[in-house]
Length: 271
Image (cartoon, rainbow, N blue to C red; front, side, top):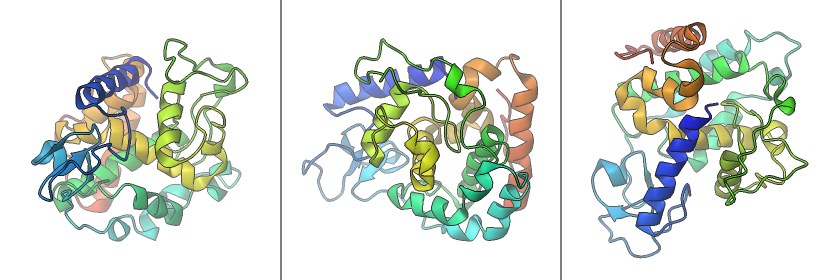
């Protein structure tokens, strides 16, 4: 995952949360009973109407939901078509499953459900394109060589690192850094700072962590094209000509999955 870009995104969330009087990054916003029956509660703690409150950021109230069935789009043929490309020796073959992915979405009812049906299909294609790239089509659970890397940002005293733990990439979107593990754990129910390995040991938590990251950092830029999602996930390391082969890999996966799901990939594919 990205380093500076993630940090900038989290800072933006933090500032929004402070302005709203909310805890930043919460999946369950802290609006309490202050919203009226016609208002939505955003993840930043605001009450209001319109797409900014009732769309991707909605965490309570009359959230926009196009009613699309994710299970009808992510069919066994689609999911297993990705998984079965991983070698039989891959640890992910016995870890990731379509059923667990769908179970994880019970905690994220806005995932790929805030626009048109075509937009839902495009967002699903984008999510699986990045997951496939990050894990080698669901082959790996943990980042190769991640344990030897320092993913502790000591300036983030709100999410202090445990010196005996590593916050390297784990799960479908390779959750990384203490400032992601901490809030992800708080929001989806595991000890992110004390037991980050849970993301590599519990398939449901693994998918929840990936969708949590997606909803908090990526879903909001889907309307800017697939290239914007690359920048949101790993822009500082791959975009602007730094790693063109990796960018193209993500694009190729996205266009392939869009074709499988019967939707046009749209514009702005690269970053």
